[in-house]
Length: 150
Image 1 (cartoon, rainbow, N blue to C red):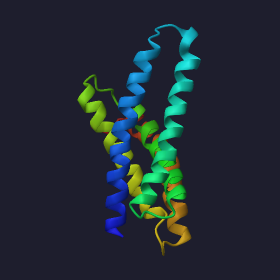
Image 2 (image 1 turned 45 degrees about the vertical axis):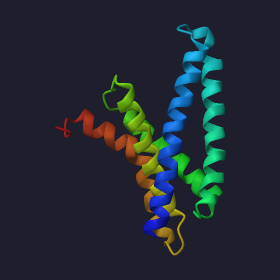
Image 3 (image 1 turned 60 degrees about the horizontal axis):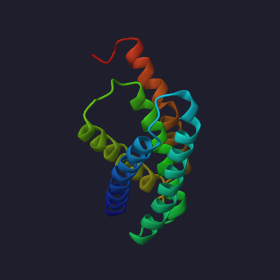
Image 4 (image 1 turned 60 degrees about the vertical axis):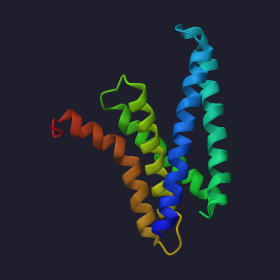
């Protein structure tokens, strides 16, 4: 099981850095600072994200993390939960830190996906992990709101 989680985390972490670099290039390529080009820019980011999801399913299949399509979908959902929670935290202006952050978020999402889609995991644990991921952004917001973070 740990090999499966490690392989999924490594693959998804690498795809996270690739997604970050591609999205950054696409955003710079659109080159707008006005609301008129927001829809094409977001559409481009959505297309990149969907391509990465399809690529994740292919690569996870190649490194024996099966069922790869389900693992890729779970990883995408976990990445969205981690991203939403991360948006509540202060931003980092350094591009290297952003790339590392993308790798960590995607690797964590891949590890969660490999664990959840692994063989022999009881349904109650899958439901509990789904609930934790769904409540993660709200929990981070509550911690920041009530000052429990520091």
